[in-house]
Image 1 (cartoon, helix red, strand yellow):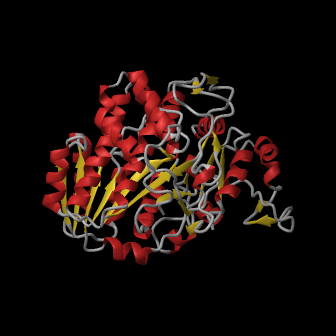
Image 2 (cartoon, one colour):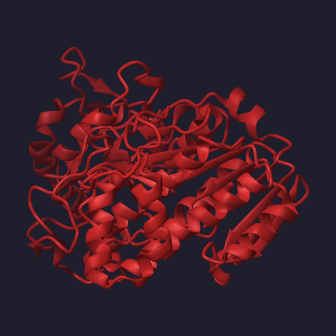
Image 3 (cartoon, one colour):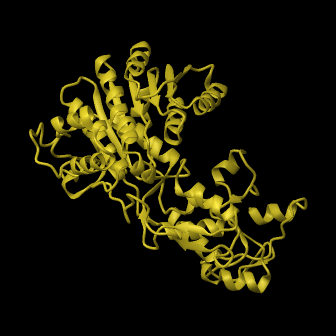
Length: 462
């Protein structure tokens, strides 16, 4: 189909030269007068022999792993690599066959997107009032976009950044203003009175709490701000939900809350404990959802690498063996909605992030995707930053729930031990009086269960 289009459309500046196919029965044949010169592992040789400038991957239904394997062969050449659109989109007239696009780093992660239970999510969100904190952030704004597809009655966008709330408000208003009410709210989750006022006024059915400080090295230097935003802020919103009878509350958490080695992870673990303690006594269904790094989110490694590549390098990677779990923003947000629909109260849902990715491999792929070779853009190793781990975990050994395990494709329930209510309350009451170093130590000790509990409230909450 693609070759026929290219041969017939003389306005396009493309001249098809040859096919590559792993099917040996097709090799040495001619199709539309073009030779099938060999298999995928011969791409480098064929590109040199024929002076190829562009490679188009004409297998839109490829799995991510297969696409990655092919791209790695293409990346050994200087040819630009692109991919055809989905055949379904061509057949429906959404795009033409020759609307090929550049391969994106998201295409190369080796993950297949999860299929959601649209019926249960629709029942959970349609016609309801939904409130999202941190609605202007990377995750919060995408949660708003995903919620909007389920036709809520009212969507309340809460955030303290005026510009980011303006942007998501305008985006949704342009698309959905005739379908449901959209209310932008400027407010800081650290302002307890404001959170109680907002939740009482709008009476949401579901609250997604995405507001947080998330930058690991910055929070090492500013632990009190991490406590105020991530722990106090969570408590303010959660207790307001309890007070005014909100049906569901979902905390967006992180893999850095597992065996935390940094202040950010410790404060997110304590935020989980805050809502788990509330879940024992409240009619609101409280749950947390943990996932790893999100591709392209603000402050993440992808935008930084792109900026460094545009400047001609070097691309800085902390360590050659460092790995991270990655997920796209839309997939992470959709799974947050799915987990919320599954919540019964007190769970920590863990998203299956696939296989961890070496950061240095991600850097190499981005350099190649940007049209450069690894000789042109240097990769430089800069050493671990304050609070960083070499690898992340999604559950520690004590948290794996063997009875329940995977309750939905790519969603697991974790169990957590030792809900230290008194100790958490003590941090909330007196943490800000401590010196920076002492506060950091207390947070990490508590989040890693390195204390003698005065009272264990519950052994297992699930």
